[in-house]
Length: 141
Image 1: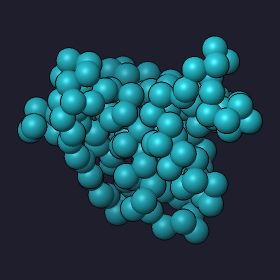
Image 2 (image 1 turned 180 degrees about the horizontal axis):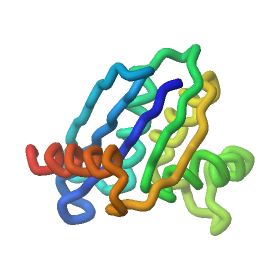
Image 3 (image 1 turned 90 degrees about the horizontal axis):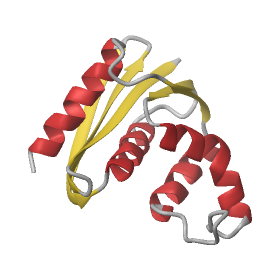
Image 4 (image 1 turned 30 degrees about the horizontal axis):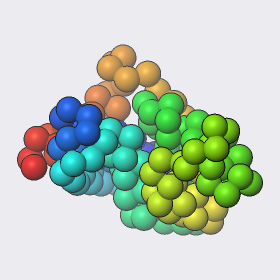
């Protein structure tokens, strides 16, 4: 089983952003992070998840822990309607971050992923560490 904790951060929103993920592959820990200028928190949340999934063994069950309801609900619920409606929201507007959603959707289609939402800043040590690493990455811009 692979457990992944992800987080995104943005100094101002939009502004300098950072993302991070902590990947626990049966006790082998990998920490990854990155940053981007002129971005949004939601983009950074998505980037953390995409980057982490690109690093894992696709033959194992994966649990992703995110404190972003945007990511969790987007990939487990909203995306099916977006695809059906040609990437339009219920308000007939273009889906924001469409290119990242398509990438995440394509990656997860070939994986066994269980999505878990965790409350931010509530004492979950790996979520707190992912948050720290994402903020550090955002500040590095």
